Amino acid sequence: MRLFGGTFGGSFGGSTVRRRGAGAALTAATAALAVILPVTDAQALPAPSGPSGITAKGAYLLDSGAGRVLWGRAADTRREMASTTKVMTAVVVLETRGVNLNKRVTVKQAYRDYVARYGASTADLRTGDKLTVRQLLYGLMLPSGCDAAYALADTLGSGGTTAGRTRSFIARMNARARSLGLTRTHYDSFDGISHGRNQTTPRDLVRLARHAMGNRTFAAVVRTPRTRQKAVNVNRTYTWYNTNRLLGSYRGALGIKTGTGRRAGHCLVFAARRGGRTVVGALLGDSAARLYPDAAKLLDHAFGRRTGA
Image (cartoon, rainbow, N blue to C red; front, side, top):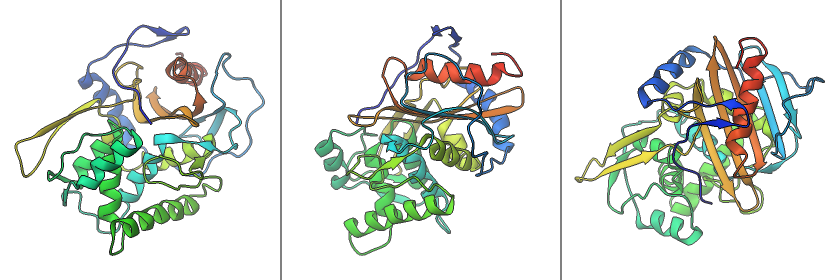
């Protein structure tokens, strides 16, 4: 389950994309943190046609503040979601009662063995290093580290064994999905490595993203293009780059999460803010070549309705 990395410039299918510095991207995103994003949205997709040429099998686009559906395709069809799963992983961590984001977590060899076994995306955590829960959230969401996901689930799950703790954590992910009304979402992993029943819909994924962005820590993490995090017990610094190529390239991009897998295809849940409006979208089952052009085209479509692309 390898994910994209790097940055880009130029244009996507007529959608303007600009290379910007990390500082400018952070400034553009700051205003979004004051917005409390609701969970519910309009249920029926609108009749007007959306942008042409979108290749994703499933898509959904929402004006977050108004709760108005802007466009969708197979919005309620279940599909595998790959590492966009990690949005819920982060939500469960951040919503754990009494969570201490400064709690130190020791990296176990089991976490490294896990990513090696599955050929999974990794934060390249080193055995014996201690990192805080907050640092692991960056390792989870920027390089999409399945080792960071394992460490968080093992640390914040309940039970006497690693297997028991991770199972309980996944159960909490499913319980939170139900409480948020994500009726067509089911998790069977803490990181998106599917065991046959790790599925969501574009509509559910957008609902989750809107909820998650209401948490200031989550919003700060996912809008970060790059971070350097030093282990708290040894002289080692981790440098992690965000896999979301919209950041710093599409004006007003706020982040969220990438994902890719053999059965899932290429996936992206994304958000951007312009002219006082926040738009959230999701693409499931897209192609590698079209994922970011499709996201940019959808955002241009959304902002072009009132403010111009």
